[in-house]
Amino acid sequence: MANSALDFSAFSPSALSAEQLHLIDTTVAQFGAPLLLLDCDIVREQYRTLANALPNVTLHFALKPLPHEAIVRTLLAEAASFDLATSGEVELVASQGVPSEKTIHTHPIKRDKDIRDALEYGCSVFVVDNLNELDKFTAYKEQVELLVRLSFRNADAIADLSKKFGCNRDMAIEIISKAQQLGIHIKGLSFHVGSQTSSPQKYVDAIIACKQVMEEVVDLGLPALSTLDIGGGFPVSYTKQVMPIDEFCVPINAALAQLPETVQILAEPGRFIVAPAMMSVSSVMGQAMREGKTWYYLDDGIYGSFSGQIFDEASYPIVAISNSNECYPSVLAGPTCDSIDVVAESIMLPKLNNGDLIVARMMGAYTSATATDFNFFKRAQTVVLNEPSLADRKLG
Ligand SMILES: *Cc1c(COP(=O)(O)O)cnc(C)c1O
Image 1 (cartoon, rainbow, N blue to C red):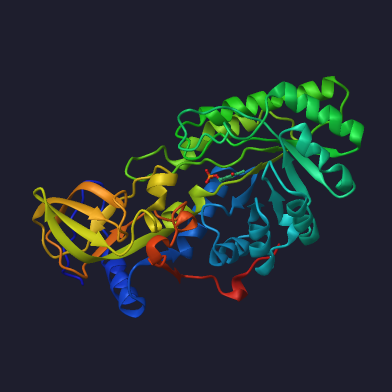
Image 2: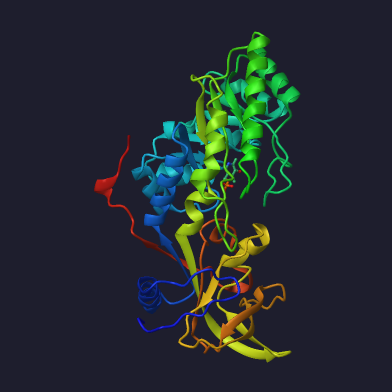
């Protein structure tokens, strides 16, 4: 593969290395296509990079964007903590031996069974954003510590999570006062500024607002809050460059430094940890000329690994593996019989043969997690690379 020239698609900022090409070749030879290649080395690197950029923050990896056991094992070896939202996620971390003290449960709306499942595992930190939810914890008040989630709307984020969850400051105070009456311990506040947030100012504003709520709590004679959870949302570069994470975190750290030193800071990064760690490899099943463009029908598409193009509004850097440099207007379509199953409408690609491979990068977050097997097209198999050995595992 060393002499293989790569075409740059319209979306593609950079080529694959010779090692990557070799790896793709050998893995497809072994497992067939479509595949998702998950590189635990990158998970580890992303975790360390964010941990360095946020030195006083305990990172709880949010499982939602890629709930894979190899990632749990990799991050456990890094002594990471975990952010859970469902009983399925509780089961996953429990099955990998994650100590329950390293977990928080952050779904603002839970059934009693969800609470019991988490408690049975040993997770005791939960999130509420309304009085109805607070009530659910009266039965467990001896065992739980709660975070009150505030809402800060963010029209710029890919997912404005504050539309669906979180309360305003007045309601936060009401919840905290009510909890005091009920004898339920409120540990602190949390927020999520929205996924793939491009500006650190959203965090800064939210941190300052939370600081004010914390002060108001003290002024009202309620027990002081000990924790602030700044959520997820940290951005990665897909086809557009975002601010480097070190730079992104400078104003966030400055805002956090204004909080009393006793306040423990948590974050719930998901996308940032896993997005760069997975690439998709699909192959051309067939092709047709339509209105002057070649349509290539892949064995993976919008209903599969590329589901994030719909659910996450993401566009991934895509390259074709080809020896040819001459490019033509092309379309990449998914395999299903549905017309919305189109991965790229106007992309310049070399002439491809059936069986040729298409590689999309930055496909770790919100891809396979939301894939379906619509039309009985099986989801892409995930191949895990560079898993940590058990000997490396750090449980501290
Ligand atoms: C989805 C989610 C996260 C992860 O968000 P990213 O934008 O992927 O970092 C963290 N916390 C909660 C509560 C979430 O719902």
